[in-house]
Amino acid sequence: LHASFVVSRAMMNAGRFGRLLQLSGVRHQVSFATVLQQSENVLPCYNIVQNQIRPEVQETPGRCEETSAFTHSIKWSWNGKEVVEEGKHRSKRGAKNEAARSLLTHLAGDEAEMLDPRHNGAVAQWLIASITEELEATLEVKEDKPE
Image 1 (cartoon, rainbow, N blue to C red):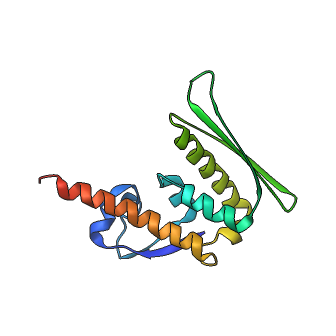
Image 2 (image 1 turned 90 degrees about the horizontal axis):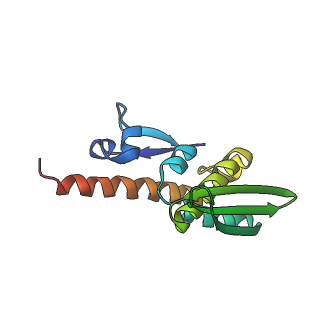
């Protein structure tokens, strides 16, 4: 799954996505999987997809006994399909975010057409907002630093 985004030269030098876009020219393709992997917060996308698929959802927060990290397990069931993913992080919200990232990555493989930003406007909107937010935040930090 790829979506094309027009990116200014200033933005190409910014942040995690900026490093991915450091190519000649102005128009670049960024895969959905790359944005999922690089985004700090995938929960908005998770909520979008959950509202579209409308699965039966079971979520189980917990703690890892070995590392004392937080864990979060998500199980989705719909149309005879089932996906179970788990995330670990030092915070409860981070663990849920990592579980959501794993689930979305799984769905991107199994339900690729449904998550294709060319056919799913809500997912495309999240992708654009996620990239824009990351690039703008990095540019603001760069502007604050004296050169």
